[in-house]
Image (cartoon, rainbow, N blue to C red; front, side):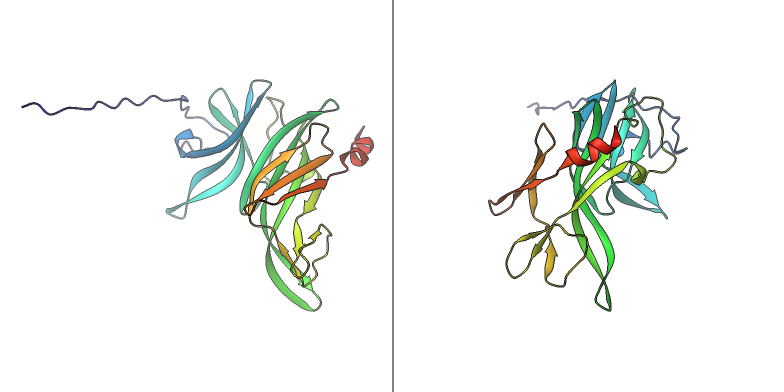
Length: 213
């Protein structure tokens, strides 16, 4: 009696090339990438992903936005220390923008006390230069392109949203965001929470767009 045999074929989606600006073929290996969302513009793919890297004889996953050209990682952007929850690439008023939502670990001072908090925020970057095929950043931190950051905090007692830059003792960060959207005119961001709540935040992006032109 013959047993059924199953043949599994593997197809390589990307060709792996040995040369990269990082000097490490393992980092540039797209088999080490866990993608979440992607956008394509100007024959460039921007990928919100976790990239597995070897550090001190062990591996860790780093949350990055990857710039991919011709199946090769040519640049990487570190937006948040911990995690990029959501990423969108928007075109508005002849400019491109990265709209991101994620979390950082921050050391803050509340009164006379220092403490570490996990801060969820929305970060908006002018990505017009980044979509250029020939543009490669010297540092994966792209704070020079940051044009607005909105901290997402809530009052523990009242549940009201607090987006100020200081950190009162009675606020906590959002950590239960399951969906994220940006209006086409980039005036509003909406957040969906795990208990069915929907929060809309006015970005007021027009005010800083005017200063950039």
